[in-house]
Image 1 (cartoon, rainbow, N blue to C red):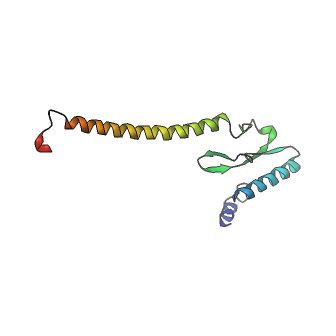
Image 2: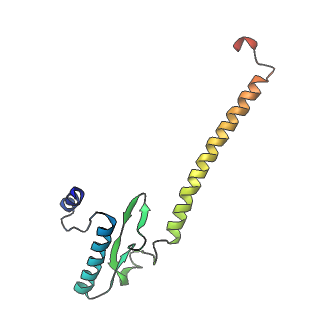
Image 3: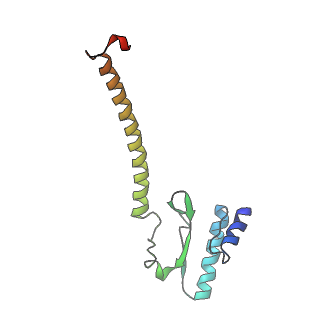
Length: 126
């Protein structure tokens, strides 16, 4: 667990931690229970059921007081409209990229065919 030690060194309060999925979920649940006791108000481990991956492949769980959920702009579900829209845009980007490559290929084929059939084509160039 060398990576965990590095995170602890970088974040002395250990607010940020990492590890395998089971460890992270157990630690988050433990912290929710601990904060709920200490602050005498309910906390939520947002993303513990469906881990949030809105930042590329960075997956994280957010722990926050339930009463501040709206203040922190945390939607009720990680699969909010924004997350769904982001996933659609990712797929749309791949499709657009493939369509662009296909269009370039077809254009090159068309250009080559027209060039070969052109009356201005000089036999010496061939």
